[in-house]
Every structure is written in structure tokens, then in C-alpha cells.
Amino acid sequence: MNDPNELLKRYQPKQVKTVNLDRQMTSLRYSPCGKFLAAGGFDGTVRRFDATSEELPPLTALTGHSGWVTAIAFHTDGRRLFSVDSWGRLSAWPYTEASPSPLWTIEQAHDGWIRGLALSPDGATLATCGADKRVCLWSPDDGSLRRELLAGDDVYSLAFHPQGALVSGDLHGTIKQWEVATGAWVRAFEARSMYLYDRIQDVGGVRVLAFDRAGRTLVAGGSSPKGGGFVQGSPLIHWYDWTTGALRHTLKFGADSDGFVYDLSEHAEGFWMAVTSGQPGNGKLLFHLPGSEQPFFTAPTANCHALAVHATGRRLAVLATNGGSNGNGRRLKDGQEYAGNFSPLHIWEIVAAG
Image (cartoon, rainbow, N blue to C red; front, side):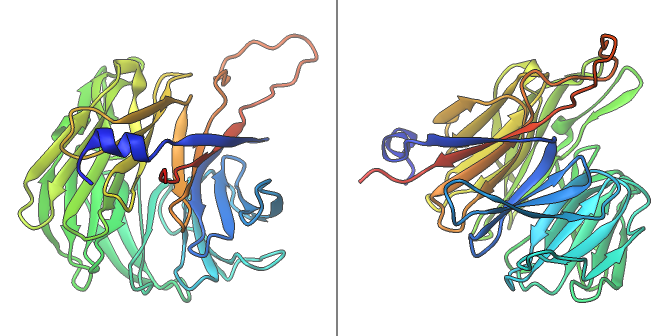
């Protein structure tokens, strides 16, 4: 379907539930079977929820990370979940068990912040990237390091093509395609509009990468930065032709306070779902059909950082941060404890009419 007006008539997204998680979470994914929903947190845990119930009852959390759990990924075998954190740890979990312990752990997979995590379509290779300017390829079976790719820049995002090629997106707006077997990079896609140097700081970066189901299109999300003082910018998405490398379509939308595209996913009908977050209180859930000037659906949703699509395609989960989030330096009264932030988990239905 290539008419955004018809898509809006057919798909009337409806928010059906909000669950307020007691701590701030940053990553979110449904298991391939659709029975589990997992969220990685700033408290070093991976929260699990029973997605077979409308009430999303919590299950035993996965504990052991010391830093923020920045990314999670489910294996297609229906048994394993992988998680990474801001201190460089990579772990594998038997997530279907009642009280899982790690299958294996690499304490220093990266020197510091691991920003991205991706699993190859055949389930045979796990890729991570981080602030140490490396992309690492691991065995999902035992965590052994297979190859180290020297990216030369802070790497924010990763994605595998349906046929196995790997791409990475970095701070300065370069997207590299890597040859997994040799470790060489094959070509680059230019996304320099997602980077700005301002006020003695680097602003921007390719924050998320994804492929369409057919493997014909590479999609990159980030921001068009305006300034570094308050890290302002407008959300930005590029669609590239995978075969030619040409930029096929660009969507820039919102105000300078709307910030970054943090997560996105393609719907079976060919439109894309994305979430944004910027200055405190700003954020959107949006649906967009490539080629259109603007999204055909937007819902203001404060501080959105992740989305997850259920295996059926009929349910969407959006992870956010509370609208009145507290920053560093907040003055406390005598005897008052710092409450910290929490994460509203918004559940949407995206069932087609008729």
C-alpha cells in the first residue's frame, strides 16, 4: 500500500495500556515467539514480562550487569537472550527459565560503553560496537571472539542485512558496510547531516540502523543537530538504496527540541514506525511511508527511547522516561530522598480495520 491517507484509514493505532516501571529503562524487545517482553535498565537489570497476558506480569529479572543495559537481542532459537552494558560487559541468558543465570559472560567485551548489539539472520554471529571505536564479532554459543573490526570512530549502531552483510553507523555520520568473513569494509554510505561539531563537542551520530524485510533498503535514524549547548536538533531519517548506495528518501521533522530518532522498525505494510526523544518532555511515536513529505501518524509521547513490535505485528510497545524527569543538581529538601526517574511502558494496538 503506497497511499498514506489509506494507511491512516486502515491502521488506527490505539494506546491500550501504560505500565509504569519503577526504574528508568533504555532498551526493549519482544521475543521471536511473542511470549516475552524484555527491557534493559539503568539499574543493571533486564526486566522480563509475560507477554501472553494483557496485564504484562513481571517475571524474575536478569541481574549481574554493573552498568546501564544499553541493548538487548533475542536469538531466533527461542532460548537465548543477549545483553550489553555501559561498562563493556556482554552476557548470554537462557531467558525462558524461571530464574536464569548467565550461560556465559565477557566482562570486558569493549573498553567502556557498548552502544549497539545485533545478531546475524542465521543466528551464527553476534556483533557489538562501542565507544572504543571497535566492532566485534562473537560466537553466540560460547562468547569467543571471532573478529575485531577497527572502525576508527565511536560506533553507535549496527544492523545485519537479511543476506548477512553487516553495517555500522558512527558519530561523524558514516555508515560502513563490512565483509564479515575478512573484516574489511566494503563501502560507505554518507550521513554527515547527522553530525555537528559545536561548542567544543561532537553532537549527533547515526543512532539506529535497520533494513527492510526485502533487503532492498537501508534505513538510518538520528538527528539534524543545530547546536551543542543543549544538544538540540530535529529528528532525521535517511532511506538508502542498498544496491546502488543512493539516498532515496529523507524525513526531517519536528522542532529543534525534538532531538533524535532512537529506534525504528518496518511494518509488514511497508511503512516505518519510529520513536524520538529530545529536550525533557519532548518525544513522539510516528508512522511514516517513505516517499511522503510527513508522517501519516504521530502521537506526542514524552522521552521515547525504544520500541518493540510483537511477532504478530499487531502490538507495539514503546519505552519512555517520565515526563518530569529529574536531572543532576536537583535541590533536595532536608530528609528528602532523590526519587530518580522511572519508565512508562506504553502498549499500542495496530490492528488493521476490517
